[in-house]
Length: 107
Image 1 (cartoon, rainbow, N blue to C red):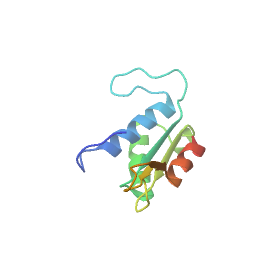
Image 2: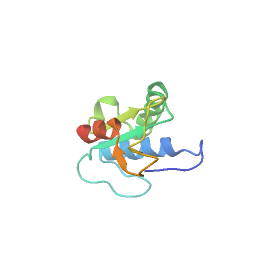
Image 3: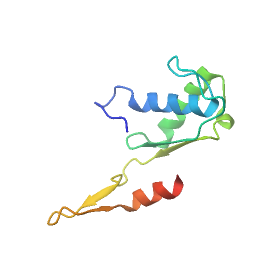
Image 4: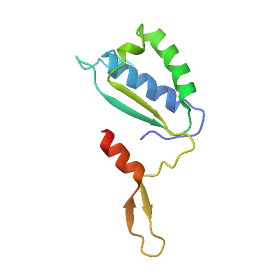
């Protein structure tokens, strides 16, 4: 999980990292794994159009295209319930949410 104040570049950094992993390229001076590494990035504030727009610019930097990103999954969840657990106010017992199960199945 990556968190911080809005607008500081968390989503952009995450997309850049996912692209580097998917294309086995260096990231922030760190040498890559010799083969593409699968990743799943969940975005709760950026819609699919914004993610695609940013990805086109990231691809230009890495010299790749969308077809090179098979190991990478970007999931936009704007406006959806994104909690992974819900807690009963009376008992404080937690229960995983449907979104948790969706992620679990995807992974």
